[in-house]
Image 1 (cartoon, rainbow over the protein chains, first blue to last red):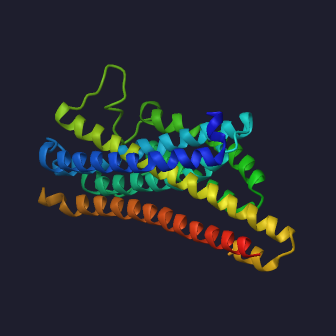
Image 2: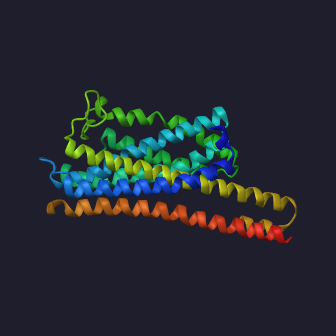
Image 3: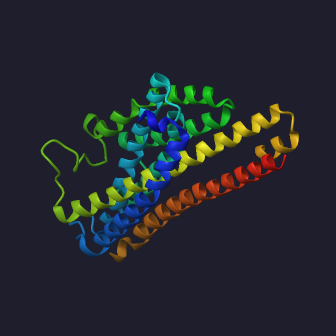
Amino acid sequence: MLKYANPTNFLALAARLIPWLAGAAALALAVGLYLTFFVAPDDYQQGASVKIMYLHVPAAWLGMMCYMVMTSAALGTLVWRHPLADAAQKAAAPLGAAFTLVCLVTGSMWGKPMWGTWWVWDARLTSVLVLFLIYLGLIGLWQTIEEPAQAARAAAILTLVGVVNIPIIKFSVDWWNTLHQSASVFRLGGPTIAPSMLWPLLIMALGFTLLFFALHLMAIRNEILSRRLRRLSITAAAAEDPEVAGEAAL
Amino acid sequence: MKDYTFYIAAAYGFAALVVVTVIAKIMLDYRALRQKLTRFDNKERNR
């Protein structure tokens, strides 16, 4: 782990991993979409609208998983002061926001024909909306504080405070009476979904997860390059060469 | 299937739009950063 605290080592590792992760993600998503539309049966109650679930559920899982990745990175920033931890945290926030937005919108697309409404202030829906707002808050925080080390600490603290929302999302359907259905895959006693529907769902989730890791590595790589550019810009400015400093700051 | 076609197409279309936008943003940022670093290196070398 410490070996990859060196940005050069990390960039070399990322360059090797990104094509494999992206290729595996594309393959898994292609197989998942084929199974979703040509193999998985319609639900006896939901009809064909259940096909939205093969998108909605993995997006929801990724929205939460991304936050746990950010929580680990926040600990890395505050406790171990790992040099790449805050870059990993900053890079993950827009991805988490994107997956959570997909979860919210696709859930709404399913809710309209099934529940008769686009939105209800149900505990599960509201807690996922809060997760989305926390992501936006973290992105805003990074953009507001100019000094990267200070921004990293503030974002890490906010991330650790916000992690309390993850178990609320997970158990909201058990703790309160909600319109949202309870867990049907990750539950004690095993999944309640028929294998013909479970496998496409798991393969889509695998595709989304691989896509997330590929995009996360790419975004961390961008963050490292951005910091390198900033450092060079400051060095040039310190050397009182406004032409070079101005170019780097563009 | 046809009763829900609009909702299914809208959900998958929206997800595709978001994913493509995120991928494009990251790749364009990467290209811009590489170009800036290359320009910076060239200027430093010519000093």
